[in-house]
Length: 481
Image 1 (cartoon, helix red, strand yellow):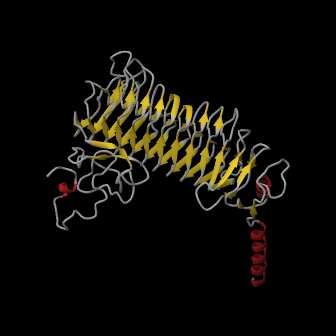
Image 2: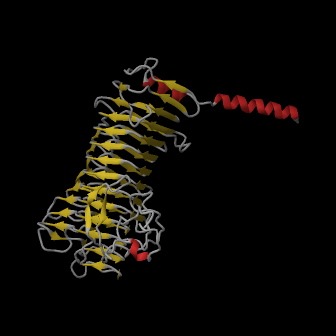
Image 3: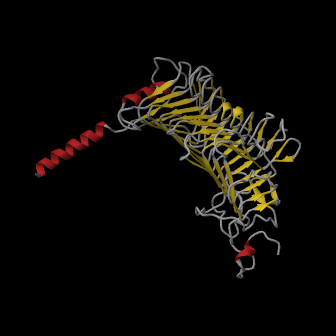
């Protein structure tokens, strides 16, 4: 038995040695096909051929210029740039995308790729998705501390396109990318995507200026991110998501523009049973441009949405062609039996035309049963027309100014609207999901006395009240005393 165990140990050691990952270093920053030793293309080809999860290191300060088309990745690999954010540049000069990552349908997630501290600029996907990177057919990609700048696609995903795969995007910047169809920066199809602490700025597409997603199996989660000044020629200036599973939390969408619907967010749930949630987030200063435009802040066109502990403020729509109440609206729910629930949310300062208040609106027509717009423990600065708020209406503050401060950096990774002293939103909200912090994250705790309405908790960073004495819970809020 001891001999057998010894032989087994030798066999296992040899097996592990055969599967050991390899390290490759890029020493040449030009490109050719077939590649020369030291080129990035040669390193990726070697990593594709070597078993295990290999690593490719590009020296700090380098810029790799691709001239021989995209580089295919078909095995697990980590491509590491410098120590800081986006320390290494990769550019094909608008001749191709950089990487095409293709998984193995027989071994899902076996192709597991990490891209770290890289800048992708000047990529062009042509008539296929992904101006810089395409992730296809059961691959997994993790992106950390990267920049995607000035990439283009005549299809979807100006920077990144994900199809039947998984993407994790962390601490990255996606700026000035464009797609002719869906997702100016990021397009998702039948895939699972998680985004955290990332910034989408000045991207452009027909649908979803920053992020667009479709597919009955897709899931999109945005956390602690900023979606700013993006543009959609049709719908979803910030994001356009036609998927059954969406969570947007601790995220600010501001200054985005759509032509027709959803200046900040456009949601088209593909099934009424889907989970659509916007929580602890801010939609501010977004707009729609067309005279029939609706949902300058947010549109739910289909499905069921909960808008919780959030702030929807100062979004704009143009003057309507008629005086109908179904046009405009900071928050809009489309006709046909769909549901929006406002829970502990501020809707304030949203307008259409020349300053006409338009906080909430609901599509009315002959397309199925009426949709339902409900509110609980929320604040609406100007009451909508009768019948617009047609669901539950419980413990709300209507026709009440929340005394919001301008959108600003009040701590944390995203800008927020602080509550002014004496705001009636203080200590009038609820939190049944147990939020630890307000939109800004730690250390801005959610509870000082009762929960405030909206995305911002007044005095959330207060450790001591000021005089080290005990006070009633209510005095921790922003009520005047």
